[in-house]
Image 1 (cartoon, helix red, strand yellow):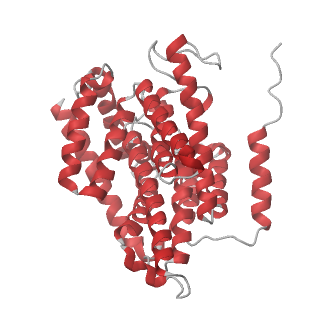
Image 2 (tube, rainbow, N blue to C red):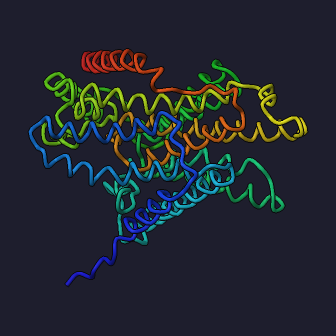
Image 3 (tube, helix red, strand yellow):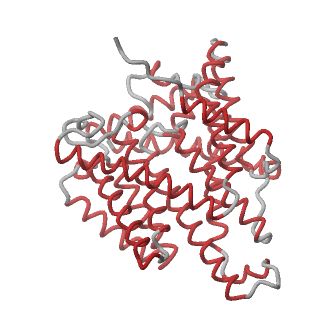
Length: 410
């Protein structure tokens, strides 16, 4: 007889956190993502109803509502830099533990969970990270956080050594997943970092050199070709997703229904939403993502002049020091976003909880910065509504054109 798995601890903890948040007086819903994430859930439920399965709306709610609540609670709770750094540290350490599990898998063929290598060569974990691609997605997201946490000294250099060691471990874990999307995500983060620090020309040159280096390593990167079987399968899956959208343009075929219409999943987070939730769901998802990038780019574009927002009693040297720390933290979130969505472009990860954890960190960081530096731009969903309709149309057209071009090339 199988042992009882015990009480659902995650659900219990989330319920307790929700209760404490409900009675808290420190609630904020200023960022557009609050309404957008809730609207995304509602449209996902409607997509089931419009396709004839009313009970499917409840199924979608039960599956995705905990993720929405996780986002809301985390985005509200992390209201100081110290709290944000603590959450980043916890996530990064947990990811490093999973990377150590992967190293053990690679050395012995099996990890301490009893899980073996995927396809005989690729590391994996259990639960939501039992796919090497998902594991790589987590590692990629945490690499910039580890570098940020290690950017400052302390404890006679031990703190920096600790976090940089974890960063190296996570990068090695990315390689052990043997995921092409993960490796491309690392290149994208390198390119974005170099672009922000040294300019576009240096970024292109360094990223190109790194790409050639990765192609020389013994990995699946050497199979990176649109006509290769795995890549071609993805392009064909994208094409099927476009066809699903054409048949159900407003609300799609229903959230979670892609695999009912095609043998392969979409292998693209944007195509997945376009097919399953139609134009409305796609536009909402696009807005969630783009607002996050805007919220990370806006502080980085400002120089030290922004300290005019700081109270006069704060010395200029201290204000500049704190602002530069905030910019470095924001840059790490930008890099995490860039890496995550580079990898997610080749995966169906539109609904996974780690995405909305990352969104929550971005929203929490920007909400805090807006309070400290009021001259940073305020993002308003009501003001941008017409803009998102236009961006949604452009996004749909761009997706269709991209798929047709790739099919023609293949």
